[in-house]
Length: 440
Length: 173
Image (cartoon, rainbow over the protein chains, first blue to last red):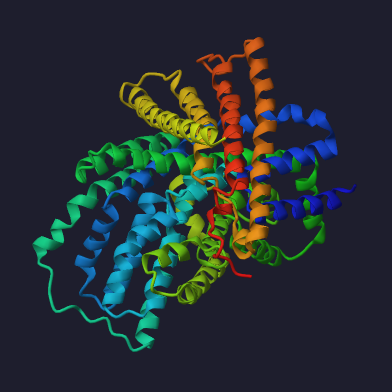
C-alpha cells in the first residue's frame, strides 16, 4: 500500500473514531496501536509503552497543571466578580463603558486563568445580566461574552501556546509574548464592533443616574491587585529568562492559591478540594491526550506519512499564501468539531515542516493556529463557550447566542488577515524583548 | 455486579485523591526548588525528576477518576444528533475502545516496568532514580482504568447509565 493510500486510510479512520464519541486520548491510542500492528506487525508494539511514557517525561509539561491550578484558584474564587466590578466602577461613565468593562475584564481574566470556558463563565455571570438589565440586545450581550471568553487561549499565559510549543519545539516564552499584541488587537476589534452595533441599533449607553464615589472606586482595587501582581511577576520571570516556564508557573500557582485563600477566606477543605479536583481533572485530560498524541505522531512518522504529506504539498508548488489559506481552512474545519488541545497536538508536528518550508515564522503560525482554535470555541456545532453562556442566560435561545457570535467570528477572520499582512504584530514583541530567532 | 460497580467508584474516587495529592506535591516541590536554586543559590538534584514523576504518576493513577467523572474529553456531535439506539451502540463502542486501550497498554507497560525492575534501570540524571518506581504507576493506573472501564460498560449495558449521559428524549433526528 502506498504512503498516500495509508495516509487516507489513517485520516478516515481517525475522523470516524473521533466523531463517534470515543474519548480523544483513548481513540488516538487505539488507532496508533492498530495501525502499527497492521503495517509493521506485532514487533512494533515493543516501543509503544516507552513512547507513551516518553510523551510525558518532560519537565516543561509540569507547567500545564501549574497554570491550570492558577486558573482554578482564581476561577473558584470571586476574583472574576471583583475584577468586573472594579472595571465597571472606573469606566461606567464612558459611552459604551459597560462593553469596554466586559471585554476588558475578559482580556484581563484571560491573562489570569488562561482558560476560555473559565473566562466566559466568570465574567459572563456578572456581565450578561448587567448588560441585559441596562437594555443591551440579547445577542450583543451574549455574543460579546462568548467572544471575550476566547481571549483566554490567546492572551498569555495560555495552555494552547504551551501545547503548541511542546509539539513544535518552539520557545514557550516567545509564544506567550507573541500572543500579547494580537490578543489586545482582537480585544480592540471586539470592542469596536460591539460599540458600532449598539450605536447602529440606536442604543445609547447612558450613564446611570448615580455616581461611584472615589472611595468606592479605590476600594475595588486591593482585592484584585495581588492577582494582577502575580501575573505580572510570572510574565517578568518568564521573559526575563530568570526561570523556566514550569518554575514560574509552579510559584505562580502556589501564590494564586494562597491569595485566593487569604483574600477570600476560603478556609473550607471543600473549596480546597474544588481547586485541586478541577486542576486534576483538566490536567490529566490534557496530559493523557499529549501522551496519546505523541504515540499517534510516532505512528505517522514511522509509516512515513508525515514526510509524504509534507513532500507532496511541497511538490505542488502552490503560492505560499494559498497554502496558508488552505491550512487555515483545514484548522478551522477541525476546530468546529475537535477540541483545541487534540488539534494542536495532532496537526502541529505535521504542519510545522510545511509552513517552515514555505518561509513562515513558527511563532507567528502559533498565533494563527490559536485564533483558529478560538473560532472553534464560539462556532457551532461544538462552540463550547456558546453553551456556557447559554447556561448563564437560559432564557436566550441558543440560536440567538449563535447569531450573536457570528460578527465576532468575522472579527477573528479579520485579525488573521491583519496578522498575515502585518506579521510584526505578533513577532515584534518577542523579537524586541528576546532578540530575533537564531536560525540553525 | 452492583457491589463491584460501587467498589470501583470508591476506588476511582481514592485514585482521584491520590492524583490530586501528587499534583499538589509537584507544586510544593517546584516552589522548594525555586527557593533552593534562586534564593539559596544551591544546585538542585532531585526536584526536577521528582516533579515530573509525580505528574506522570498523577496522569495514570488519576485516569480512572477522570473516566468516572466524564473528564476525558470526547467529540459528542454524532451521539448528540443520533437517536437513542444509535447513541447506545456508539456508547458501547466508546466503552469497548477505552477498554481495549487500557488492557493493551496495561500489558505493554507492565512488560516495560518488569524490564526496568529486572535490569535495575536508573535515570540518566544526577539523581539516579530507580526507574521501576515511576514506571510502576503506568501498569497500576492502567489496570485500575481497565477495572473502571468494565464498571462503566456494565452500567451502560444494564441500563443504569445513560449513553454519553444524554437523556433518551434529547436528540435531533
